[in-house]
Length: 148
Image (cartoon, rainbow, N blue to C red; front, side):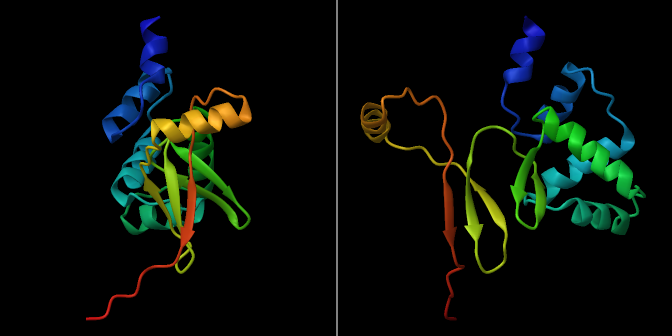
């Protein structure tokens, strides 16, 4: 029962992600740790190719296959986030519920924590006849230009 409770605890840090791996009995290989560390350092969503390139640029030699296999294992256990896009998958460090800002200039996906007012949630529940247990919102926009 305690193992089950630990598996549902939100992942908010690299330490939480490592603990989730251990609680699930996943082997924490050197390559898997490299990927987790990179995603927590980067704080952005990256493609498998970007992860491969960045790790190898850092001198952490890892093969393409190893990157893909580890990303699949981590995302299938909800330790990292996997976002399906028309141009491929992107991986991020936060797996618990959150919303995104999609930058149309850079194609970046930024994590944002949005809390809707209780009144609005109640109104939607009444209107739709459902009990909302979770939600995420996708925002789309352009970077604001700043004049210096």
